[in-house]
Amino acid sequence: MLRRSRLILTLLGAVLVVLGIGNALRLAKANNSPSAFVQNAIFSNKIVIFSKSYCPYCLRAKRIFSELNEKPYVVELDLRDDGAKIQYVLLDLVGRSTVPQVFVNGKHIGGSDDLRDAVKNGTLQSLLAVR
Image (cartoon, rainbow, N blue to C red):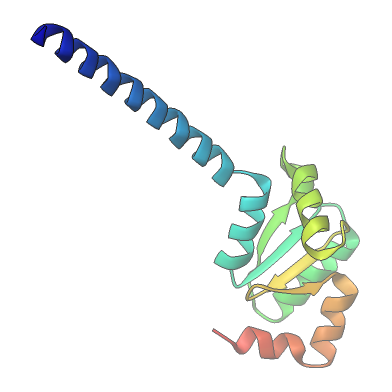
């Protein structure tokens, strides 16, 4: 009887370990989702540009930051397997699926024209000074 109880407890422990590993893998997968990636990128970096490597408007946005001696974290959507999924996340988040989409200190600036306007009116410089 004692032997059977130990066997049952051992099997029960093994089942719990397997369930725990499965749950951990599901959580890891959820944390690696495009949505989690976008949120992490926005809030872990001072400047984020969601871009496409061939886009002239994206190049203009990158050039603006270069001229300000700032180094943005650039996500080239066309070079990622999940780029289209990230673009859908951006559509849900900011209401636009176009690129570039620029964030500074967690705040959505917008696209290339919005960024240029923010430079002209001093909003970008103010945001960059924060932190």
